[in-house]
Figure 1 (tube, rainbow, N blue to C red):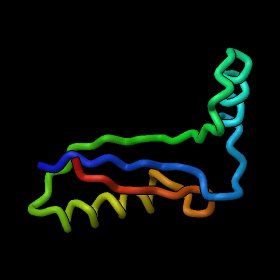
Figure 2 (cartoon, rainbow, N blue to C red):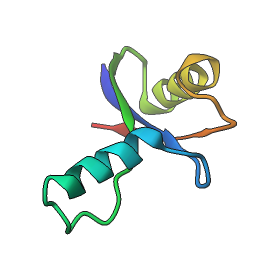
Figure 3 (cartoon, rainbow, N blue to C red):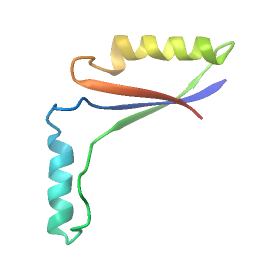
Length: 80
């Protein structure tokens, strides 16, 4: 059993309205030290696989088929 996190973000140049709105709100609340905010989604999964290589391959397949849009998203797979 493997515990895996998939971190999904936006590619450089893609508009991030949620991050921008959060940044603006933080500034309005007096948190001027925040230089930027990026919105990320994190999926945490328990994967049953014979080894890490097979688990990674399956998670990459999940990303391609459902979790990301390769046109606008980046992703990172982290084994915990």
